[in-house]
Amino acid sequence: MNEANVHRVERSYGSFMRSFSLPSNIDADMKDGVLAVRLPKRENAKPKAIQIS
Image 1: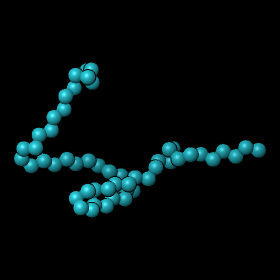
Image 2 (image 1 turned 135 degrees about the vertical axis):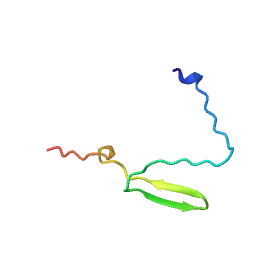
Image 3 (image 1 turned 120 degrees about the vertical axis):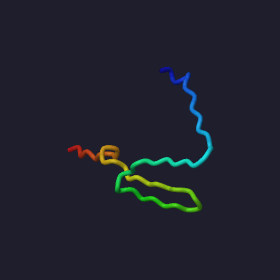
Image 4 (image 1 turned 90 degrees about the horizontal axis):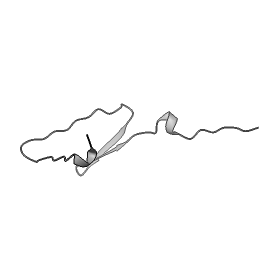
């Protein structure tokens, strides 16, 4: 399927709920109806220190 031909519409009729799974090591905070989620970087995404002798 060509992505140029895709059209997505979400309508606000009736009740709506969206759910998703998150890992257990997150830091989440809700303030004024806004959910802020902070995830730590994965180990393979962190820079590696290589010692050169």
